[in-house]
Length: 302
Image 1: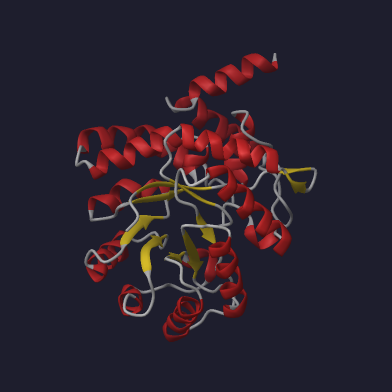
Image 2: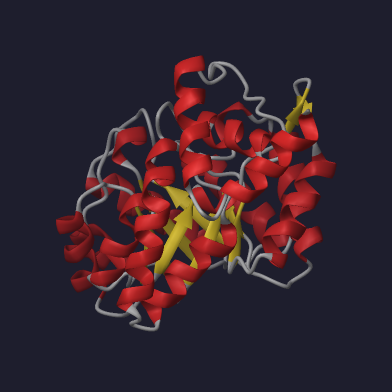
């Protein structure tokens, strides 16, 4: 099973092209900050806008730079089973630790269709799988009973749960019964989900506050509720601010303000609005885990 803080990596762009040099720097920074694992080519990585060549280049770069120091969980799921199988094969060839399989989007399969989709990937490729449930993006909700059925059909090590429902997270923990981990897919719910049996987070927030996100998760794993609660309260306003507009627009704007990468996103996403940018700056300045870096960048810019 997976436990800890796993960063849902942004994909840096420069003038419309992949910025692989910056991606390597981000991987190194994440490892230095103590992040437990890297998750490239997910929602936060703007995967729907990537060509097959770009998708492979990102995964090659991340796995090569990580060099086995932390797990790499490659986002390989699409809404076509055949494409998902091929990407999962590539992820295995490139040395990924596991593949993250999102529920198929747009075509909105039934629970039986999701089950067959995941089982087909597992039958075709020998690689541990992380299921990703994000109904707000896909239009379909992966139910705990379906996940429980899949445990006998696929090597599932974790479920990234982004339904936004603490009840569903609780049902999922009970359904998995310790056979696979439940990882929060929403930073604002990391501590609540861990309090009912979750084992960590696949985090957007960790792109800009990796050490603090990891500290929160490991405090919760150690049953240090006082420390975990303090960190949750310190990080909560910033976690919410990262969803003022569609992810990853705000987190990339925050990364630029902190000097980590450009804010550039690909169409059909648009840059962060001025009003949201102002609120994001206030959240960064008010968070003890980003305020100093933000102030230092502002000083350098003068």
